[in-house]
Length: 318
Image (cartoon, rainbow, N blue to C red; front, top):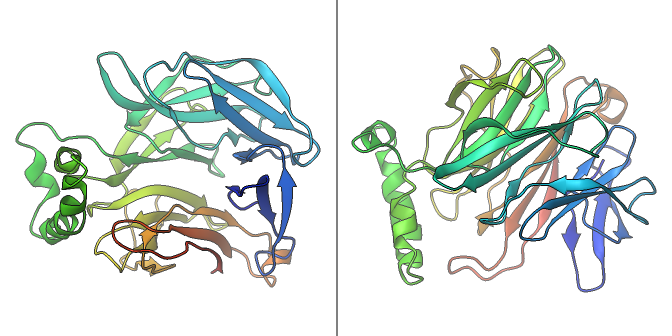
C-alpha cells in the first residue's frame, strides 16, 4: 500500500506499509508516484507546458520508461490530473481537469486500452477539476470532482440558504481578509460553492450522467470514495471551515451516492490547512479479519494563512 509521495532535498520518497497502516517504511525513488497499477507498477507523469508524458516503473521506482507519445495538448495551464484508475478489464481511465478556449474549466476522462501507449479523446465529466474515479462492483464508475465554478447569475442563493449561509460568512472572514492582501479577493468572491460533485458512468468512462452534489457546505472539497464489500459508498472530503477546526470528513451512502446517512465521521482535526487524503479498503488479513475496514492517509499543509507549524501525515484505520 502506497502513501502519497513526498519530496525532500535528496530524492523523492514513497511511504509503504505491509501491515495495513500500523507501521511504515520509506523508499527513495527517482520520480514521484502518482498511481499504482494492479501488477504493482508505478505511474508518474510530467507536463511540459504542452503535453502530458506518462512514465511507468516495474521495479518499484528504480527505473522508468516513457509510454507512447503523450497526451494533449494542454497549452493553457497546468492540468489538474487525478489518479489513473485501472478497470478490471485492464482499461486505464485518467480524469483530468483543464480549460479549453472559450469553455469553462471541465474534467474530462481519457481512456487507454493499450497500457498507456495511446489515449482516447477526452470525454466530458462535469465542471472544474481535482478529480478521482473508482470502479464499483457493478462495473459502473463513480467520479468525485471538486466544484469551484461561479453559479449562474441569480442562482447563488440556492447555495447560500439558511442552513449554509453561516459557513459562507465564516469562509469570507477567515480567508477573504487574508487573500485580499494578495489581490485575490475576487477569486474568493467568485467561488461561492467550493463543494464536491459526484457523477456516474455505465460505459467505462465514455458518457457521464447524474451530476449531483456530494457535499453542500462551502469549503468541503477534494473528495475521494471507496466501496465497501456490502455495496455502501463512503465519501471522504476536506472540510476547511471554520478555521482551526478543519480536517477530513466522511459520510456513507447506501444507494450509490444519491442519498446519505445522517452521520458525519470526523477523521482528523488540524490547526493548519487540511490537505487531501488517499483511501483504500483493506483486505481482511490486514484488517483483523474484519470486512470493510478503511485505511485513510491524511495530511495538513504547514505555514498557511497565519499559522506557522510543521505539517504532518497520519494513517487512520476505521
